[in-house]
Image (cartoon, rainbow, N blue to C red; front, side):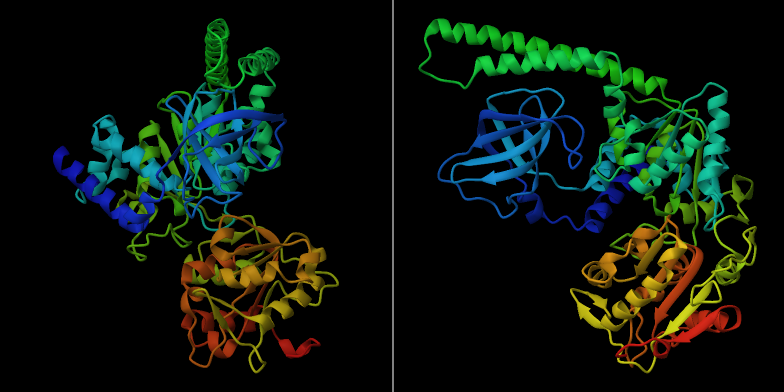
Length: 582
C-alpha cells in the first residue's frame, strides 16, 4: 500500500471519527468565543483541593452591551479564557448584566487587554485524534506511518515487528505487575520508560504499584480525579518541592505587586503616569517571561529525572518535549482506541499492550460491533508476539470457575483458597438472589432502566456483608446507579456505586450486582452482553452476589448457564427468605 493511499485511509478514518463522536456543526457553532475586556483582578487566594494546583485569581470580563448570553453560560460551567498569548481554564462564579466573573488557575498572572471566553468542551479523545492524525497526515511520523501501513495491510502483520508485543491477561492475572516488572528491568539498564492507560484510575494504579517496586514515577496530568495518594508525584507537586520554588514564589509576589501598581487602564491618566505605567508593564512582562522560562526549565529537569513517566494518552501533550522511549507499556489496552494505540507505537522503540479481549472494548458509536485495536492485533499477530497469563491472584476458584470455563477455555489457575465468610449469611463465595415471583419490575427512564425492589433488597444485603471489606454495588444501567446514590439507607454504608463499564479494571472484596431487568417478554437488553457480564462477575475478591429475576434473565442462554453453574457450585436463594414487602 502506497503512502498516499495510507493518507487517504487516515483521512477517511478522521471523517468516521467525527461521525462516531456525533459532533454536529450546530454544536461546534455554539462554542464561538465572547470578546471582552479584562477589567480588574479583585482577589487572590490559595488553591483548594477542589481545583487543580496553582494560584487562584478572580477576574471580571466586561462584555459588549447589549448582549444575549448563550445557553451554555451558567454559573459553575468550565470555561476557557483566551488572549493572543495565553489560554487559561476557569470556572464561572457569577454572570451579571454586563460582566462575567470566574475563578482562574494561573501559574503566573497576566493582564493582556483583549480576551475571549468560550466553553471548555471535554473532548480529549476527539482532540487527541486530531493532533495525532494531523501529525500523520503532515508526514512528521514516518515510522508510525510505516507501522500502520503494515497493520492495515492484511498481508503484513504489524506484530511481526518484534518491538511490538501483546500481553493477554484475564481478570486478576497481574497484567499491571507484569508491565511494571518489564519497566523496572529496562530502567535498571539506564532507560526511561513511558506507561500509558486510557483512564485516570488505571494510571494511578501504575503509579502506586511502581512505588512498591521502588521506582521514581512522574504522574502526568492535573485532573481532580487523580488520587490523593499519588498527587505528590504530579508535576505541580514536584515543582513545589524544588529549591527554586521559594524563588519562584518570591518572583510571583513581586509580579503581583507590579500589577497592582499598574492598576486599571484609565484613558484620562497624565502623560507621565502613562509612561510610568508603560515602564512597569515592561518590567512585569520581563519578570513573567523569567518565571515562565524558569518553570519550563524545572519541568524539563523533573521530566528527565523521572524513571517512569505515567499518564493517560491525552496527558502526553503535557510532556515538555517529545522523545522516543526505549519502552512504552500500555495497561488496560482493551479499552484503548485505535488512534491512541498509534500514538503509543510512535512514542516507543518497543511497545507492550496488556489487555483482555474478553472484557469490554472501547465504544465505537458508528459501529458497536467494531473490533478494538487489541482484538485485531491478536487476530493478525504472530503467535510469538503474544503472551497469555494463566496464573490468577484475585479470587478463589469458586468465583473464577464460570468465567474460566466460558471465556478462557479453562486455562486459568487460582492460588487463592476458598474463603471462609465467617458469620455472614452466605455459605458460598458465589450467590444468586432470585426475585422471581415478587413484585420486581423494571422501569424505563431516560433510555435506561431501574428496579426499585432490587434497590431496597440490595440495601438489606449490603448491611449484612459490609464487614467483609470493600464493597462495590454495580449495575449495567446508569439509572439504577443514580437511584442507588440517592437511597437513604445505602448512603450510610461505605460502598462504591458504579456501572459495570465504569468499574472495569477495578476490584472489591465484595461485589453486589443488580441486573435490573424484570419483564414477561424475556428482554435483557445489553445487560447480558457476554463481555459486560464477564467483567461484572470477575471483580470480587471474596464474595460475588448477583441479584435478579430468573424468570426474565434465564431466557438468555448465557445466564441460564450461569444459573445452572451457581446451583452446582454456589448458592441460589430467594428474596422471600428476607423480611420485606416483596
